[in-house]
Image 1 (cartoon, rainbow, N blue to C red):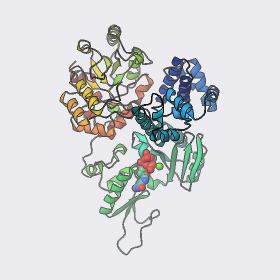
Image 2 (image 1 turned 90 degrees about the vertical axis):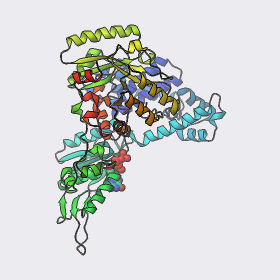
Image 3 (image 1 turned 135 degrees about the vertical axis):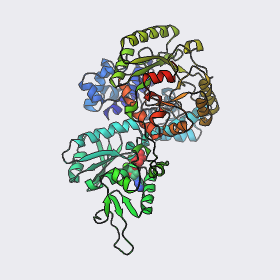
Length: 583
Ligand code: DGT
Ligand code: CA
Ligand code: CA
């Protein structure tokens, strides 16, 4: 996970530069590069090998050199020197999202705060309030930030977990002793956050697999080591559990180590009702009273099945339950009646309804974005650049819009079998007013509206803004509805009852953002929205051609929210979509 190390170093550099009062643009450039490296869907090593580092927005030749140095040595000389120029503990404080450089310096200078733990103590004891410019609200936000910081240490975001798992699974796949290998646990369920990574392998030679696993780079500590399992900690502090089973137990073990704890408990109860016993080794007949007790592993006589997940589910009288559903949220009951929904798949997706180009803060031209979308097999792309007031993100003026519209018209007349929609991601301001007047909004093919400021408003105020946006007859989609940004920002509070009612009443489509740090709406809210009859759009919010590939994360989130093809509008063909939006 070298990209994580790189983005952490860049982010730290940005903060130190800011504390030292250096050029803010330089600091921001590091911050921006960090953000984009973090959300890469490709392996950064591939980019280096193919000399494509400059395809990352914000990465020029200077940063490219630094990236190469970090991948080669794990460190950056420039950063090591920079660190020496500020007091130690200060850097840790800066990792707390709600603590900016100015405050960190203040706490350090006045209170000698040297760690996050100390900061939390001072905040709780009211000591921070004695400092100039620190109000109750500031302290409240700092405590929230600390909670977020701690949570971020305990669990990781899904995209990072997938990347790390891949680093370990890929080489093992090539190992001649490994017959099968797969991730399981919350990662296979595609949960929005992952605590630790669980990997399962089939092999007749578990010791060979364990040896090969322990020789992989990026391992810091070996926690436990047994004959058929081991546990390690990576250099980034991520725990990985590996277990090796026999072929005949693979399906049973996959179910056991994938299902959430509650799912597993339900399944076991169901087995008992059917006079069966299920564990990680297989499904077994329960011997009659008086017969010898059932051992866990080598009970050859009573073994019924366990090789594949399908046969285990069948033996319990269940339909196959997709990993994303295994949370004990009613799926087992439906599987028993053959009534599970047929979940959305990546193949069903025919276009992306939220993307940015160079017109606002994207890295690529409209044509490049369209070509990349077409390469993914899509039929359309919604070019939703930011609206005018969002200056930091290059929001488009009315004049810019005219030029953009002309360019899209020209491209559409040239591109065969592909349609670019003229759109905008229009800011919903703190009063719920949209950032372009209706006379402008009406000109767009599709209007995506979203909140980008005023996150700290009350639940009531935020809900009012969203409802007001729903009522605007030009709004089609509301993007990343809860504003959550993993590790940085908790979702703002919304009265979902009221918001969903408005979306449903006014036919507003809600986004399931596939952007790795968002996944918003999340699984639970997807399902609630669907139950209210709301349609959803699974979109990537891409700022580069590369990010278009993150669609799979949004699809996974939608699947966890029980969504089917019919619930999601970007499974429609161009013509069906034109019809849907009455274009
Ligand atoms: P995480 O790592 O916190 O994101 O969540 P999981 O679901 O990956 O949980 P983990 O790593 O503790 O365990 C991996 C799998 O093992 C989990 O999906 C279900 C199973 N499992 C864990 N603890 C128990 C348990 O106490 N009873 C049963 N039946 N299964 C368990
Ligand atoms: Ca796990
Ligand atoms: Ca585990």
